[in-house]
Image (cartoon, rainbow, N blue to C red; front, side, top):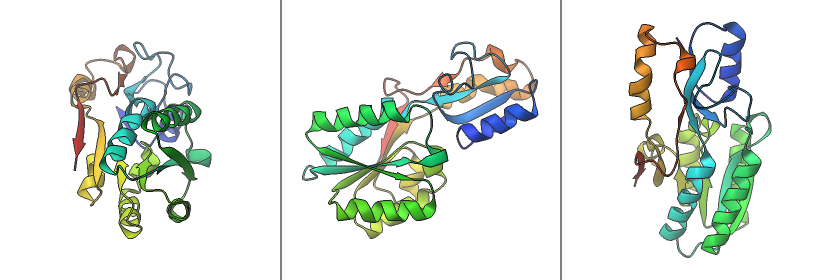
Length: 215
């Protein structure tokens, strides 16, 4: 079994190497829309794993940080750019704009595709008076958790993230989905009991009871 982490690119790299060994991906936006699998219930090929839709979870994070910082009239949204920008990003931005409108705040979208661009994005958001920040749920930002937390502290911007590890690193608040049940269902694959095509893709959603928050 191959475990592919870090978004869609590692999954595609694994797919190029084998069509028989089960591939389990751990963090992928819209695997159907991006062409990785044919469906969530029966992925086909040799893939399965965990798919998440930030458009389901991140509007709730915007709502939480807006309530946490009620004086914030402008809330920043940091999303990945360039090659890091995944399929589904346009829908995601629309959902976040709708969530901001519902809370009566302005959403200021900033993109970053490298560590230097993350720093520049923070500086730009502060110059434009963003009173709080939502960091998009994405593997690109997961890999740079410490930098994001340190910049939020440096600029004194209350920020919300999608994983506990951000809070462990010193971040203010996180809200996301736990995949414990999915992991339990996929564990037999490591012993070769079932091929990947027979395993439905586990999709995170704000409707799941597995959502959690940390402060």
